[in-house]
Length: 297
Image (cartoon, rainbow, N blue to C red):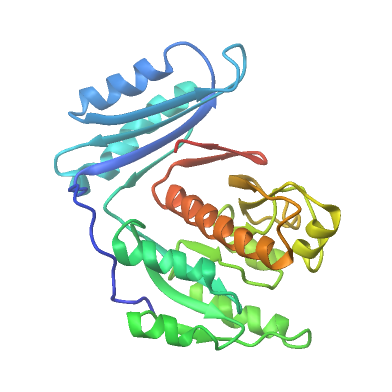
């Protein structure tokens, strides 16, 4: 089911590069301990970002990229050894291979702008991931997707068939993808589906949350005479449009802009915000803490 088509490779050789994400209670010595551990194992740190919520009793977050010769053969032992350090500092942590591209499933309905943006970034090599499949409740996007060698699955959804449709979707993505992208997919995802992909479903919302809800948001914005419009990319949780926010952006508008102008401007913001959020996720730049994110962009 996974497409054999891959994006162009980035110029940097990532064969021996790994990414480490850590969150833990802040205290002296965390950076020193992690750096010393990597040094003692022969790793070379090529990038390091850190953030503390509060030096006195807050949480500390760090993202490190490092190169280690013969990484594939040594990664499991490296993780086992680091568990000792992690235990001392009460860390939540992960170590992933940068060369292992995440596999994406893109869900879409009838609006194509977010899908097209992701496809363009993927084709150009700016989105370092593999698009395993596109799933839609309409057949409109098949002609955009299949010529690229990406499997396209049309699964209609009605109120009477929603449960069965979601069952088929889960059958397609389970074990086949790492991340689900809702690229203007106009259906609510059930809690059962979300359980399979905690903090791994990314949605784009057509406003600068919290904002207008329900149908025709741009008409609502126009009727209120708003002066800025925006978009929000966030992880999907059981709370509708209430998950941890990854990225947002806005643009000023004026009384001269009609509803169609607002839609056009909004589409541009949506596509760029979603692309940035997806890119940060696949490059392991996002750490979720409660209902917030730390993004090392």
